[in-house]
Amino acid sequence: TTLANYCYNGMFSDCTSLTTAPELPATTLADRCYGSMFYHCTSLATTPELPATTLANWCYYYMFNGCTSLTTAPELPATTLADACYFGMFQYCANLTTVPLLPASVLATSCYNTMFWYCTNLNYIKCLATNISANYCTINWVIGVQTNSGTFVKHPDMQSWTTGDNGIPTNWTVEDAVIE
Image 1: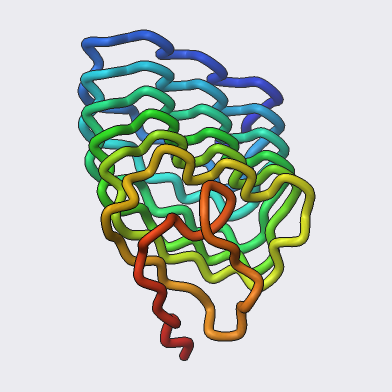
Image 2 (image 1 turned 90 degrees about the vertical axis):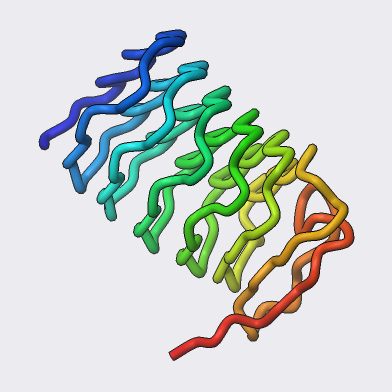
């Protein structure tokens, strides 16, 4: 439960027969600690729970990149983000249709950069960010996502989203979240 910089980085990378991931109970992460951990694990069908609420720079970068058998993503409960914390986390997860709530209100530099790159079946995102001014925080985050239809749920106070690869996917319906 106590992690060090780079621990587990690339640990199961290219284990194409891996179907189930181990538990990852740490709640406080270290720099680059789970980076590329399941990179290109094409048979991985379920993810471990990711209970961390204290993130570190580049902590989950490319974690599930190329996991083409994933249909659902784990919850991401952190509300305070770190630089590049989710960078490319689900790239090429072509069978993802929905992703967990993204509860952080203020984004960090490159935090969602290429996060859903070519998740071609994705059709639902709920992002409660109200401040997306950090450098590169949503650059190319939805490039390659299907644009036939989908739903993007945003914070009702957020008016700065653009449409396209760096914002709300083209042709998606936009709804305001109910904030309690």
